[in-house]
Amino acid sequence: MLTSAPDRVVAFLVSFKAQAASDPTYLRQFRPEIDKIDSEVGAWSVGMLMMDESSRHDDSVVATVVVVTTKGLLLLDPMSASLQMAVAWRRMCRFDVKELNDDTQAVGFSYLTPEVGSVDERLARRAPMKASEFETKYLYMLTKMAFFDAAWERLDEVGIPSDVHGVPSLF
Image (tube, rainbow, N blue to C red; front, side, top):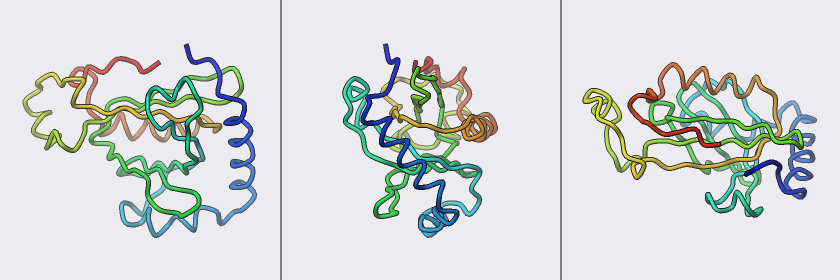
């Protein structure tokens, strides 16, 4: 059971968050990549992307800037300002947060893989989706609930309904 982030991850998140928060123009370096997808940013924060599901039990992670836009969730490399990953809310089915006992959060999100094809076509059929059609990623974050509220609001508006995706809670 995941109860806390590795100490080195927490130390890095505290430092990374302080550095980003101390510079009011920090997000500006990411605007060219963000604007390719959506010009409207709802919230942003910093996190550590777990490289695969098994890394939830070790600390194989990479730093990321996490951005909630009206169109999707973006993960950006803080060193190169390049896009690591973009997931459209329309393809998203779960965005779960677990408060850990070290003031960090574990975040899990699942989304329909692009190989599956049109989300609208799948939703029109209301056919149950298979676990093999989804990919799941995990992050460690140290942020305020307002960030998560912005993500949940977008997911509720346009995400895949739970009666269709059937993906259980990630924690």
